[in-house]
Image (tube, rainbow, N blue to C red; front, side, top):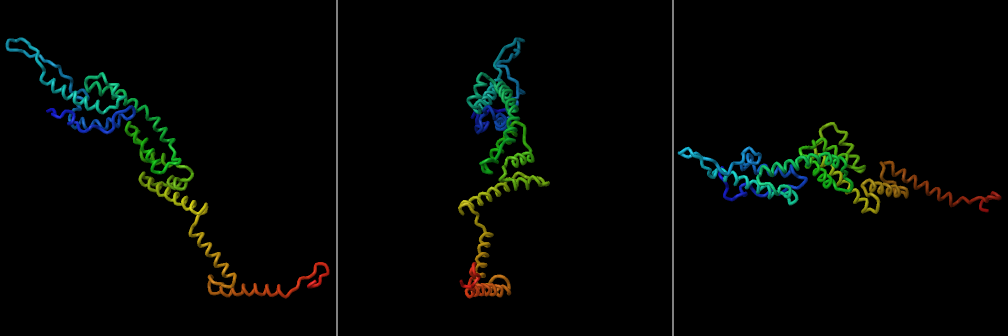
Length: 285
């Protein structure tokens, strides 16, 4: 394989996520495609064995002579090019653990042994954090992003969470305020898709925010079309009581007039009848 005159540039640009103590599988997922693209996997895995710096050749007179191995320089250049690319993708704290290695195989074995086991050991803690995560005062978007971060991290260490299990975690993380929509989804028998669930939760959150703003803008009371209609009905009834009698069918006017007449008769009777004395029982006394 011909070497690139540009050195490590043939491996591509430096990766964005450098290796730290808790992202080994994510880092590995970024590193491997570049290495495979340059056909350096054999060197990385150790399949391409290290070559001796010198080789013995047999001369015409049957004597042997050690000469520089022409393939050694090529192998060493590839090995060191790959080692340089790996080292530049490590954080300072991780670099300290491979500072003494001299070949890419030694570096790769050290990193894989140290961090793959550590990443897998974090899986139980991540699942526990996922199950205990509550929405609380977070918005739906912030809550979903935090939950998704745990799920993605579990996936990078080889412990993926299925969508139906993630739906359960999302629903269980909401408090009483979201109980109506949580109950409606938990009662469904058809599959629940994450994007559909997320859209409904955001819409419900928007509805709650709107009602809260309406309540606050009306000094602690909701203003609705039902209340407005009720106020109008009260106004019409008062007008009808004073003799208007409008608003209910053809006969309502008659009932309204009769009501007004009854009030007039009561006022008239009250005006002509004198009260009786409670002692002598005489009228007007």
